[in-house]
Image 1: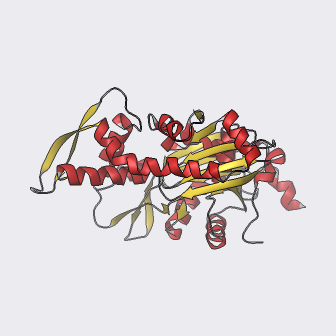
Image 2 (image 1 turned 45 degrees about the vertical axis):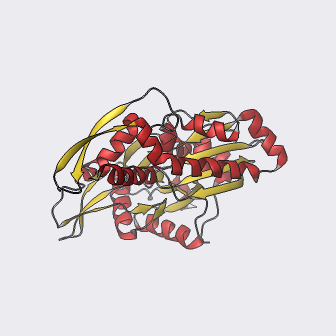
Image 3 (image 1 turned 60 degrees about the vertical axis):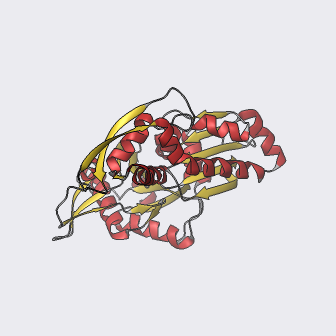
Length: 345
């Protein structure tokens, strides 16, 4: 009884543990943290030096005793100790703003569709050890659909494509649940790796992570349009010295196309496995792209050409998941049916 009473006054937190970005939503306050999922740790004393953007600035520049860690891989925790420290740091900041006698926060977070029971329990354990009072799990595409304001309550089919940094998930949603789905362990980071490999093979040059991401954002596209080019710097693999090259949007498309075609084919496969009545809904209503990958220019046209169904990109696609979690926090009674069973019960 007292737990429920004091729970009214505790802060509920929504956490989107993405492969590329880490976002936090506080009930009543909104989005308070939106940073890269990267941590800098001093290995001499095992203490966190920086989280997010500040840690990202250290990549490739840190001395030997500073370890730069990306604790998530393909939407799953790969380094539990670092993830716990990162979460604890964030949760403690939230708790400091709350009267200390009140209970710890309830934490709402997302999981991939193909998560195992072991991975699910590990995530819950990490959050509880980091300071969470209770953990509620939501499937990522479901959170994205809620953030995109799709009618998840209705008996109509809504197809959401969540394109993250390390994971691409396609889910057909109806009546609070996922009907058919497909999950791929590829995303924005896979596109970056393809671009790096292309530059290495074609130009004998090694590009850094920051440079690759920058050129992808500035001139990258999935569909041909007005030609663009950009000068980028890297290390010559023959001489070992710095060198500048010019890459065009056509070259970037050539590098990224194998990944983009795989995503388009998987969307086609998801629709193919959909019940006939729901296929009719998709044909009428189209499908929605969300996630940071949806920002790639021309991706909607590439997919539409493959499946011949209208494509819509949701507003601010990179924050669809955390906005969905936020809506669940703010309107829990009406959206609690999307919470999936805990692995701890």
